[in-house]
Image 1 (cartoon, one colour):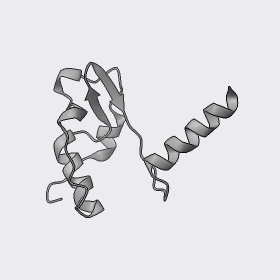
Image 2 (cartoon, one colour):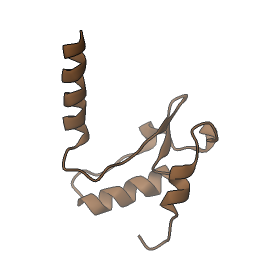
Image 3 (cartoon, one colour):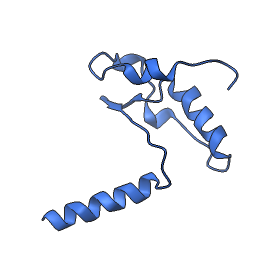
Length: 87
C-alpha cells in the first residue's frame, strides 16, 4: 500500500467507542478471490477503513487476526466439532 496506516491505533479502538454509522458494512465489502492474498488484504483494508471494526447491519463486529496456516473454515469446523461434543 502506498499510504501509511496505523494498524495499532485501529486495533486499539474499543468496541464501545466505535460509531457504527461511520463503519463499513460487511455486505458492502467485496473481495476478488482471484487476486493474490496481499492484494485481497489491501482491498479489504481500503473498503473497510478499519480492518478490526466493521458493521454487519445494526451490529458492530471487532476482529482479531493471527498469523496461522489454518483459515476461517478450518477454525469454524473445529469450533462446531467442539460444540457438538459438549452436547
